[in-house]
Length: 469
Image 1: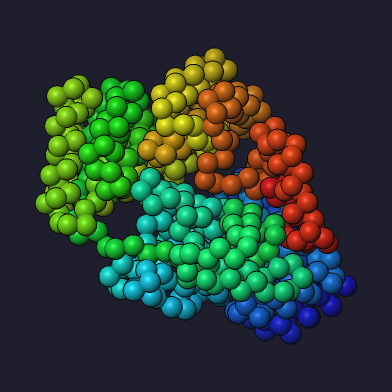
Image 2: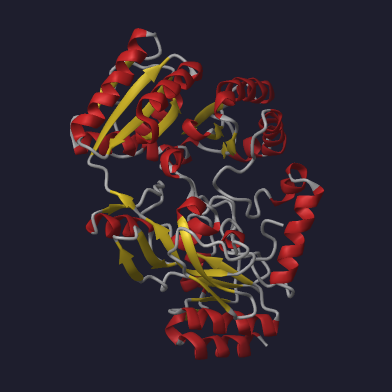
């Protein structure tokens, strides 16, 4: 049966685009941090929507499970097959065409395998701006960004992936194609079907193309890296910056000192912008549609207020494009910099913005009570309440032993998130990592609706089984 399946997949995509040798499939079977590893009957790489449709139709007929995969940058295991070897991986990497750029309508239509950075560059060439920005933007793909409803550093001003999508093309498990590549801002003709697939992590179908929103290119940006005594001062500074800049406040990233230590220690060409060490930092960026001078004047006003009111202890302003890039490299390197420090128990959570300081204080107390030597590396998008609350093992600890504490630490952290009305998954998704916890945070009615939708769309259960619900 498996041999016949492979033969039919080859007939659809061509021999070079159906991978079965272990050496060829290996890169698709391991999550980049090494937490999940699976097996597969084949990795199939369709080059068109029609080929995706033929693959899913075949999979549905043969009841073959399909795991859609983009750039394999996901952090919750949603893109990795199980260990049975019965599932096939559908890689979208060959669906990599930019179909259309519409500067007048401020949209770009791309296939799901287009790398996020390529979308940013295409927008730049057209004199426009695409705001979704992630540390993995050089390898993650649009389909994965939409399937996980990615957030990133640009969410403060422009929203998450869902907010940036106008239309979708999706292949359903039956092989039917939903063509909803709509560029209209106003279209009240029934249910908004595209939002069912955004954030569904490939459990309802395969996104093959999308219409994304573009924005006017900022005329100027001003960026500062500032030190603060605590998250309370960061919150007060955020309030001032938001009131002064409005939607021009395009980034406000909070970082603990230990994150700066890790990043300057392990990420090449990254240095501390300040000569003195401080407990907390904020990377703040203000954009202007008028000029560089206008952005700088607004930033200066915010910083002056912060210094006068004791919110800011020290700071540096980027005086060149390179300095701005250096500031951002420090922030974006924080995830990878934790790998050499050993075991890390990670949480992607969100709470209401005004609860961020309380959450951090309570979570720190709970974690240190469980493992006193833990090194807590908290950072994230404080402007939208999204904190990456990561805990590195004590110095000299056994990695495997420390990671067993996940079963104690994570429930404790998530309980505090729930107490403050937050979410256990802010921007990374559910995947296989948080599937067991979903029932604890979703109401029975919500879970029942999700299961009914899944059953109606995918009655044979072939789409990314074992993920989300």
